[in-house]
Length: 179
Image (cartoon, rainbow, N blue to C red; front, side, top):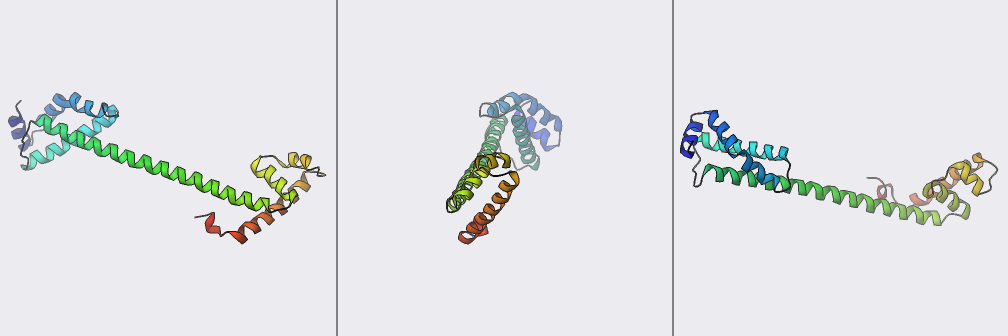
């Protein structure tokens, strides 16, 4: 079929002309996406969108072709794929920015806590460091600190944590830690 015949058929609502275009240019249009870091599924979606745009313009009677239909479809596919790549790029940048911010915030919070722990007495410093930074359990802390039992370690840790909380709240507001 010639381009003029395809346009005439589409203007009459003949969907077989669209099927013909789909089959005729499928491989060429899909290759645009595949060669530009896309998948076969993404390529199909882009080509479907391009054909929909073409169908709408052609059936409205507002389409003035200054090139072949294949060239027109090619440019639509290319533009659609560029928009998709741009959208993906923005999403990736937002994810990376969010992760970097979260890591920075966690480090900042850790520095605040470490600073406050350093202002506590030696016993509290050791207990809280063992528990929160080294991940030791109460039995291990009781042994290292030569406490009578784990209950003593738990009680001391509780009191030290209360002192730490008080220090942090005196120097920083809750909004420094929670949004």
